Image (cartoon, rainbow, N blue to C red; front, side, top):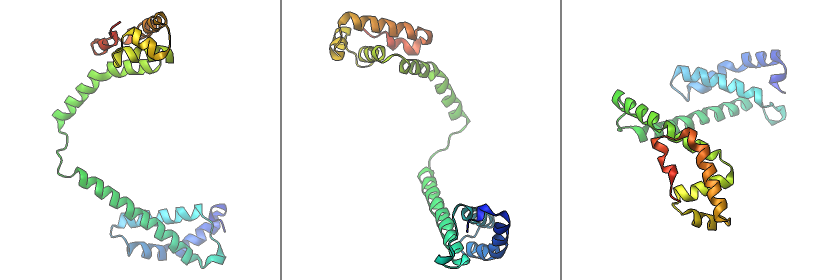
Length: 179
């Protein structure tokens, strides 16, 4: 029986079993809000799965669903506790820290724009630019590494630099590289 296909059947099913499910849940959790949420989650889960009478009674099936939902909640709570434990004892950021972080983010905005622009370059231009600027090869060495002529490498490097002029700033001076 698919409870999600018949609202009246679901309502009757819910009314028949809500008290038993709630008792099942409150024996396993102590927070009343969590118990209410888990009970709702259990009945939502029943909408996703079909009850098959041949496998046992409705309540046995429902307790199986409930056990899975409650177990998942316990695993989630354990993960959250481990995460909180890793953070415990560490200094949280204060207002001055947040201001400094915002200043760093603002200072790096142009660099992020430059890196985004580099990713938008055609492959050939990007490859030459990366070899010359990041890997510090000469244009001749970059041409050899890419298996292209030196003049082709120079043209691609020139095009890449021209395409990046829009984002040039003190943080992107490194794009000048060496020829």
